[in-house]
Amino acid sequence: MFSEYWTRVKEASELMATMKAAVFRFTFLDSDACHCVTLKSTFIKCLTSKAILHWLLHDHDESRRLAVECVCEVIAITEGFSDDDYPLMDVSIGVSVRVNVRALY
Image 1 (tube, rainbow, N blue to C red):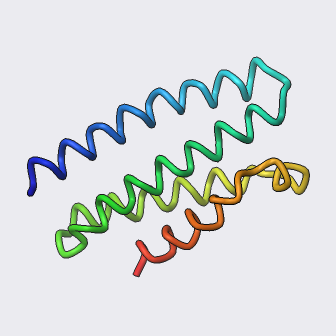
Image 2: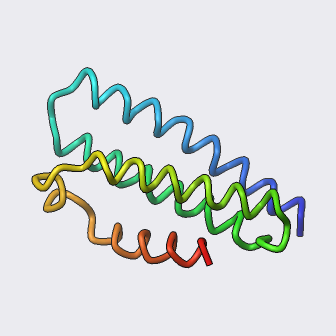
C-alpha cells in the first residue's frame, strides 16, 4: 500500500511541477486571462489530488502536515483570483474546494 501511495504522490508532484511552470509562464508572459485561469484551475485540481493522497494517511503527522500545506497553497492561489476570473473557471473547482475542506478535518 505504501509503495503505491508514494508512487501516486510522486506522480502528482511531477505533474504539479510541470503545471506550476506553465502557470508562471502564462501569468507573466501571456496576457490571455482565460489560459491563465484555466491553468490555475488545473493546478488547484492537482493540489487537491495531492492533499487527498496525504489525507488518506492522516493518522501520520507528516502526511497530515503535507495535506494541510496543499490546502494552504490552494487558498493562496484562490486569493489571487479577481471577480472577473470566476466565470472563466471550470465548475469542478467547487468540488475541489469542498474536498480540500474535508482534508482539513
